[in-house]
Amino acid sequence: MSIDERRVAIGEDRIGTLLEALPYIREFHGRTIVIKYGGAAMEDPQLREDFARDVVLLKYVGLNPVIVHGGGPEITSYMERLGMPVEFVGGLRVSNPATVEIAKMVLVGKVNKDIVLRLNRHGQPAVGLSGDDGNLFRVGRQSAPGGEDIGFVGRIERVEVDLLHHIAQDYIPVIASVGADREGNSYNVNADDAASAVARALGAYKVLFLTDVRGWLRDPGDPESLISEATAAEVQEAMATIVGGMRPKLQACLDAIHGGVGNAYIIDGRLPHSLLLELFTDAGTGTKIGPSR
Ligand SMILES: Nc1ncnc2c1ncn2[C@@H]1O[C@H](COP(=O)(O)OP(=O)(O)O)[C@@H](O)[C@H]1O
Ligand SMILES: CC(=O)N[C@@H](CCC(=O)OP(=O)(O)O)C(=O)O
Image (cartoon, rainbow, N blue to C red; front, side, top):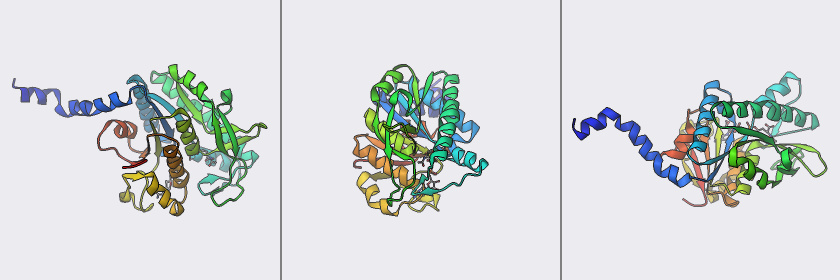
């Protein structure tokens, strides 16, 4: 059999994919990668399994993945079942004490444990945390971008990194975005903000935000208008025009970059294995944001 025939026999494409991934695996070895998990990737059962497998694989090949998750649609659905009004200002949920209670129940009690269980099943033990566990987050009150009072919405002022370092040695930390202030008042924290705060505090190499669109779109109504790459300065310039859920996400990317995180990515959680494709292939899939091009 000639060399060319052998190449065909082993499936050159498959080897090509592995070879393409190798330099990335070497580059990322031992690095901390924070992954914000939310949106559609959390709703579809097959995508949930794929996500868990991908994260476990990251740990196996020597990365240090840390998961911060949302669950906004589930909070909304429980609030509606209870007949509670649902309101967002600037992409942040207006949160009275009853709303914070539901957010805690849904995020800590349900979504967090579902993710932990799935990672465990796929072969890497995970530990679920909220901002209250081991004083992981200290939170302060936050207003909407226009200065409006939106209740008990928190901004993370401090992350207890030692706790995360300890846990991440042997487990995959899975973090729910709720926390309390010094007086013990609980807050609902936007999960994009929480992921950015965790990435900054850990000095993460990268932070990735999985969502339900292809990435940052020039025109939110046109999926073909994906912005594949942008600098922090370009995002900053566009901020005044950004609305809805993309606003806290892009702000979280900016905060991450300004806080020393190498790159921030917004990727499509509806695309199976988008996490691996973004990390281990040359082309990438979503929006990459960095200090410069
Ligand atoms: N310029 C934009 N590009 C992409 N999405 C946008 C843009 N402006 C607003 N959006 C909205 O932001 C949403 C993503 O934010 P969000 O719903 O908070 O996602 P997640 O639950 O994944 O955090 C998209 O579904 C889209 O409706
Ligand atoms: C203050 C605030 O907006 N908190 C969010 C927390 C969950 C979240 O961010 O979930 P996603 O990432 O899935 O949107 C909320 O209540 O929806």
